[in-house]
Length: 126
Image: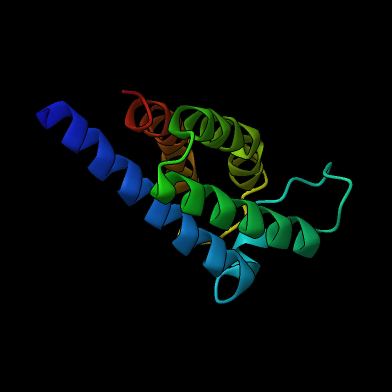
């Protein structure tokens, strides 16, 4: 029972974080997120940021609702995997955003993406 409560709390926290991040894509952090869009993405940076923000809001709301949570957890993990090249691009191209203004800070950020993937998967399992 305690494990179930911990997973639920983790799922709700991740859902809230995704909704917040999605809203920030659409509003106050839009420019920072544009710094993460790799040059090879065929869509302009702003459209990419807006679209990913909408996806984050939808994933966050779905995680919070608990409906089809395993499937939504898998989708969230896939999303975190899909956006990882943006983190790599920010590091490789030395783009400052989100206070990541040194190579070491940008490099350290790379290690948080696997944590998000694991969090999405763990928190949505029974």
